[in-house]
Image (cartoon, rainbow, N blue to C red; front, side):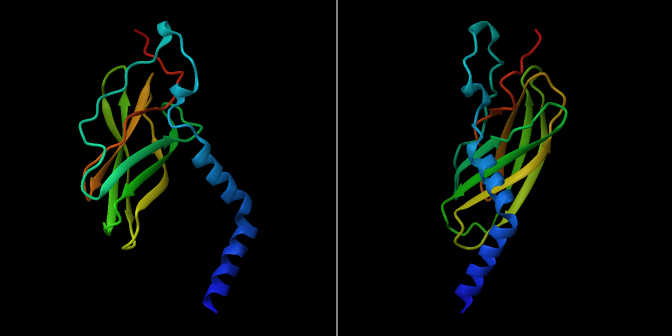
Length: 167
């Protein structure tokens, strides 16, 4: 009996929220990972280099960390990002992360968001969409790093391909 009830609830959810669910899934899955990779840029107009990250890409139960900037991000405003953390499925219990903004022109780094997700015992991933507050900067990159159960990081990601430093 309970499978019929669950199936009915899922069907009702899709009937009521189908367009919203489809739009959210498309937004998360179709957004390119790096806006610079989408376009050819003349050598003279290359954006500033991305910062080096000191943490490993994987550690302990954290197999990988990913970050994707969703459309509509601008310096000095709110920015929706998708954080993805892949786990080895060992029952991490909870996963915490921090998002940092790197000013590519000055080198300043600022924490712009944090998050924690409680996980069921067999969970092997976290996918979260969150809003971070970007500082006003000419060129910004974001990084996400796990702070527990182990420390790992995703490669830095530019907020926009159009960003340049003046000097």
